[in-house]
Length: 69
Image (cartoon, rainbow, N blue to C red; front, top):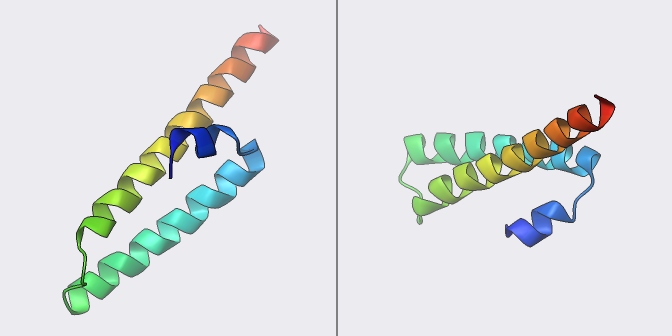
């Protein structure tokens, strides 16, 4: 997921997407623990996507907090 796609999402969509990606990461980890998955770098990619989503969410919360003050 690209940063331009992330910034285009609404805040509610960001929260929903984070939940989806965390569930996806859990499934990937279990699948990899049971038997080696075809492309283990997908786990790293999903982790980085979650981090990008969380970064954008934190940035928006900080901007909202600074507007209120």
